[in-house]
Length: 414
Image 1 (tube, helix red, strand yellow):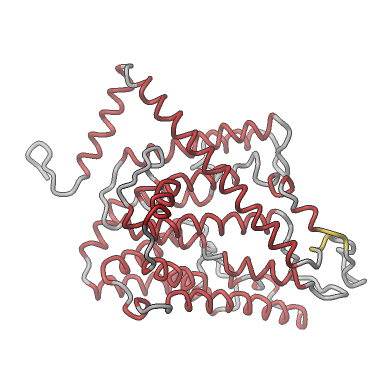
Image 2 (cartoon, rainbow, N blue to C red):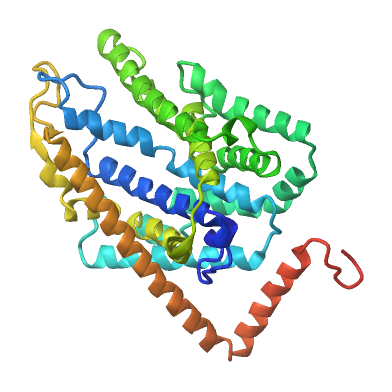
C-alpha cells in the first residue's frame, strides 16, 4: 500500500506508469489476501493438531501449500508502503481520506450484513455497533489500524530514515528485526511480547527495511532471478517447517502452540519471502496497455480488502462462492474428540479452480465497488464544498499539508 494508492484512494493517478511493476505487485498481493481468507474462513485448511485415520488428502496438502505461498501478502503490502512513504512528507489530508474510506465501508457494509441477515459468526450487539462506528480504535480491520498508526508516525519515521547513513540504517533495521522477528523465529516458545505481526510495531520494522531497500538497494537480489528464488525457497520452508512441527506435536504431544509459528507475519521466513518477491517485481518491466490498466485499477485494491473483510460479510462470502461444497465428513482417530469433523475432499483440481474463481470474483467486485465509492465521494465533495463550514474545514486540513511539506517556508519559517 503505497502512499499514492492507500492514502489517496479517491484520486487515482496515472502518473506512476513507471511504477506499474509495483502496482501489479499490489494487485497480486491483494489476490493472495483473498486466497488466505477463502482458505482460512472457508474452513478449507484442515486442523494440523489432529491426526486422521486416512492421513491428509492431496488437496489438503495443496491448501496449506497455497497458504504458505500467500502468507507473504501483508508484509508485501507494508513493504510497498515503506518503499514509497519513506520519501514522502506527512499529509493530514491523506490521513483523513483514509480514515473516511475505512469508516464508510465499516458502517455501510456492516449494517447491510447485519440488517439483511447474511452476517454469520458475529453478534449484533453494542460492541458490534461500536466497532462499525469506530473502526480504527475498535480494530475492525486490524491491518488498517496498524497502517493508520504507522502513518501517524510518518513525520518521525520518514525524517529519521532519510537522515541516517547507510551504516546507521543497517544497524537500526537489523536491531529491529532481531527484536521483533529473529528471536521469535528461533525460540520454541511463545514470547509474551510477540504480537505475531498484527501490530504497528512490526510494520515499523518492515517500513525501516523498505526504506533501506529504497535508499541503498540489496545488491545480492538485484541479479535476475534471485528475488523469486528467495520467495519460492522461503515459502517452501514455511510449508516444510509447519508440517515438521506438526509431526513433532503428533509424536510427542509438545509444541502444540508452535505448529504454525512459521506462518506468523513477523516470522523471519515470511519476511524474507516478501523481500524476495518485492525485489523480483522491482526488476520486472511492465509497459503498454497492460501497464496502463494495472495503474488504473491498483488505487482501488484497498477497497477489495475493506469489502470482503467487513464484519458484516467476513464469514459469509466464502460459502456464497462454494467453499462448503468442497467439504465432507471424514472420521479422525477413534480416541479423539472431534470425530466427524469436516475435511476437504481429495480433488486438487477442484480446489484450485474454486480458489481461482473466488479470487477473480472477489477482486473484480471489490474493484468495481470501490470505483463507485470513489465516484460518489468526489460528487459529495463537490456538493459539500459550497457550504462554508465544510470548505473552511477542508482548507484548514490542506493548510496542515502545506506545513508538513519539506523545504517550503510558512510565515517566514521552514
